[in-house]
Length: 275
Ligand code: PAF
Image (cartoon, rainbow, N blue to C red; front, side, top):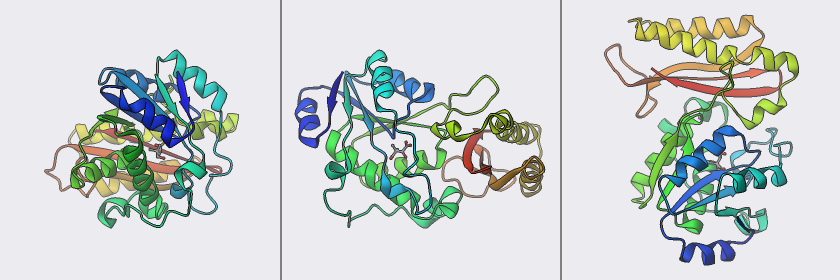
C-alpha cells in the first residue's frame, strides 16, 4: 500500500489508477470500515482510503483532540484489506489557510436530528468531503449507513453539484450483542459497554412495532427515549423519519428509518435501523 501525505503525491498516483473508489475515514479503523474497503474493491480497479480527523466538523468542546488516532494499526488493517492507496494528509495539506469557502447543506437536511445537536457539523463534513472528492477524483465513494444523515447529505450534495461520483452506502457492522461498531465505543467504560447495546435494542423494538402496524410514531419515540433515560442515558433524539429526506412521515408513508442519538456517561452514540 502506498501512503500519500501530500495532495501532489496522491494526484500523481491517481492519474493512472483506472477506476477509483474512495473511502473517507477519520481513522481508528474497525470492521465496519474494513467492510467498506472490501465493498469498494467490487466497484473499482483501485481503492483509495483516507484518514483525516477533520477539525471543521467538530464543535468546540467536542472530542477533536481526544479522537483516537491509531495510524500504525490502521495502516496494517488497510494493507491487509488490499487497499492500494492511503491518503493521510495533515492539516497543512487540507487547510493551508483557514477554510473560508464552505459547502452549506440546507437547514432542512443539516439542521435536524444530529445537525440540531451539533450545529455546523454537516457543513464541516460536506466541506471536507468535497475537498477529498476534488483531490482524489474518485469514480465512486463509499460511506457507512451508520452515519445515515451524513450519507443523505453527501448524496444530495453530489446530485445538486452534478458530481460524476457514484455514492454507495455500506451496511452498519455490529458487535454480537447488537452495538453498532464505532470509533467512539472505545470511550466507554466496562459498565457502559455492557449497557450500550440497549440503544440498538430500543430502536429494533420500535422498528418491530412499526412493522407490526403501529402508527403512533410520536408516542413510540417518547417511550423509547424514556426507556433510555430510565437506564441512565441522556437521549438527544429517537426519531422515525422518511429514508429519502429524513423528514417527518405521515401514517401512510413507507420507506422509513428510525434514528437515535444518546449520551451514555460522556460518550455520545448514534445508531439507526431501516424499517
Ligand atoms: O464519517 C466520517 O468518518 C467522517 O465524517 C468523514 C466522512 C470521513 C468526513 O470527515
